[in-house]
Length: 551
Image (tube, rainbow, N blue to C red; front, side, top):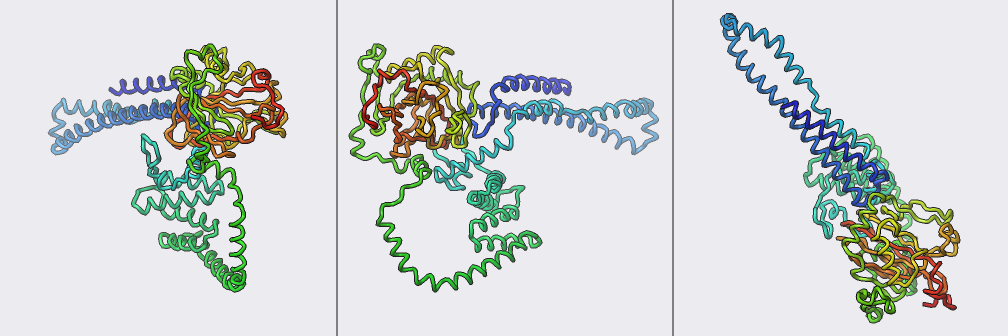
């Protein structure tokens, strides 16, 4: 039996090695906020390890069962023998078997006990470990979770209990998980999120959840984070609570004295300043009223972006809605569209954003994904200073580029875009396929090169990006919309559809109202592919206008 188990373990290691070899090509990039395409590989890796671990447990249990049977048999035998040793050994067979047991069988038992059944599991673990996420990947995943919390205004308890919109597989967080998030925020000098997650960890401990993390450790971080945000009284209260749990805590005793001193000093300063402050109350009220009467300052772009991602602040007025229509479209009787005109819906008026429904089939989507998956790498952006491609924290996704000559499906898709838009695809960039995992996003940006970026697309030699075509290749359970921050527009992903807009006016000037962003994916998996169409070759397809901002 033990030999058979060992055989299974060795073969389990071999099978896993083959899978790892296949993974090597797919996982040669960072896993920061990894899209599900790569995270799926990690799931299968973990499943392999669990299978190998259970094989090891079965082997250990089999070994222990053999030792137990041996011990039980000898316990009965020796108990009988010691009652009358001389009489027992007077039987020649008993004497022979005693010699045999001590000389041979106990040696066999020793070999059985010393037998290492962990070899297969350790071998498998060692092979797989080189593809495990790094500390950087774990930190990236944590920051993605904090980013989602801010963008969608989720409280820590909602995230910890797993009550997110659109979830199919609910998963809750342990005290250790909350504590780890708080620690990562603390290491990043982010005391706001440190407070949120240490408070959640403490809440779950107070509710009776068992954990290796104790309240003293959590309160220590929590009180300091609150102090750093200027809330001395709360920090003092928590420090007193910590000292009730551990009166000898050295740092807490020091903090207690310091917080009490600072609080007393603050109260004295407030008292002396109170009279002076009262004199200015009236004038301050008057100033605030005057400020309210003035036009409000525009919201910072980040706030606008987050609001639109939550579905707030979308400027869809009845008047604007009346200018948006649905229709069938054949692009001036294009031969390939005559018998099958496309379904078009106006999403926005200015900039004019249109959505084409049922424009890419499920089979085409699967083929595009199949071609792209082995090549997915961390997405890059054009550096406005160097003009070169580089990664950026404001764009978190994985992407791959597909050329028309690689597969007939890609050529067919490019031809379809040309037929519908009327624009030449010969100078367009290759089809870019992007996969956004949970927390994946692309913050507000322009697709076209601005005047202060004269070398943005110089190496291509095809002019600026005149238009953008964006396929949605999956539905998204929650989040993942495309928002236009300057005009307050939001477009939600719909599998099989595509949206299109011009980045440049006919004059060649950039349309700054096309500034847009990809919202973080809250729940689900977002696949998109896009085509950036360039100016060169469009001279007669979209003639230049005389007015700078002519539509």
